[in-house]
Amino acid sequence: MKQLTRLLPVLALAALGGCATHNPQDPLEPYNRAMFTINDKVDRAVLKPVATGYKAVTPTPIRHGVTNFFGNFGDVWSMTNDFLQGNVHDGLSTFMRVGVNTVFGLFGTLDIATEMGIYKHPNDFGLTLARWGVGSGPYVVLPFYGPSTVRDAAGTGVFLAYGPTAQVSPPSASYGALALNLVNTRANLLDASNLFDQISLDPYVFTRSAYEQRRKSQVEEVRDRPFIDLGEPNPLAKYSYGPENDGIPGAAPAMPAVAASTPKTGDAAP
Image 1: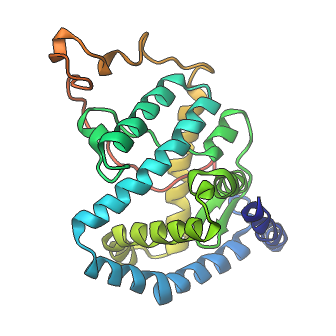
Image 2: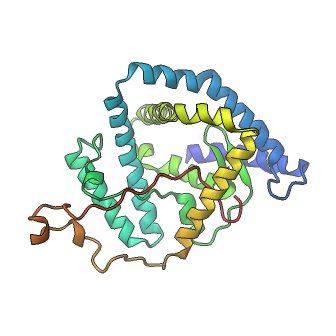
Image 3: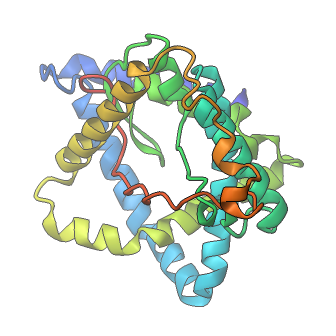
């Protein structure tokens, strides 16, 4: 809960910043642009150089293993939110994915589940709040975490307080895990950020627009589902033993890979 309380001054500052602008699409723009600039300077001065060095000295297979390991932690949080949203089908699928990768994938460092056709379904508590009718609130830029909304900032706070990495003990190990995940994620985005610097005339507007568009589509998707989404009549059928797959669990016909999406977004405009 400590982490959640640390976000409250940020949101209060955001609310004060909103008084100084008349832009209805982004009422907190003065604060947001200031925080965006601070985040960018911290990234250029600290995070990007560290990530560049990390990428230079860490072999690609090890970085992939770190990405998969933290992805497995993320799947636990996605599964939790699937069930909180009544999405039983995706919840069971992600439960199986976590189990397969943890047991057969060396605690998640190998993504065996994707090879078996059990695909990732990213989810978070901000989408859970949206599912149950909570509005997005204004767009807000968070320290380190970047683009968000008031609703999604609350979701981030809940993740920091109760997510899988928060359960790691002692707390120093939890902070270390968060730091490693941050550096590894930044290293994975180095090429994309270099391209971003070249094409974007106004990085703040570009980032806000990309976040809002993606988040809007995610919110619409979760709100369009029935409240108890069972998916297929038997969501475990394609992972079970049977003559059609020679008795091999998970040997279902291959499914097309889901295309990777872009940054997040709110309802109409977070």
